[in-house]
Length: 74
Image (cartoon, rainbow, N blue to C red):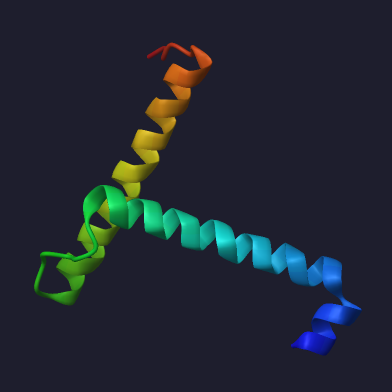
């Protein structure tokens, strides 16, 4: 990996940046909605996780609307 990094630094950093963004988002979701899933079966756990992701995305959108003075039009 070190040699790959030395020979292809730009490509390596592009992939690393994507990974760091994903890890930051996962940490933010866990901080806001908790680290554990309450559901017992696999399907319910997947649904609960997807619901947390949707809720997080909505909070980000709402935050950006207020930050940038955007009013929603329905």
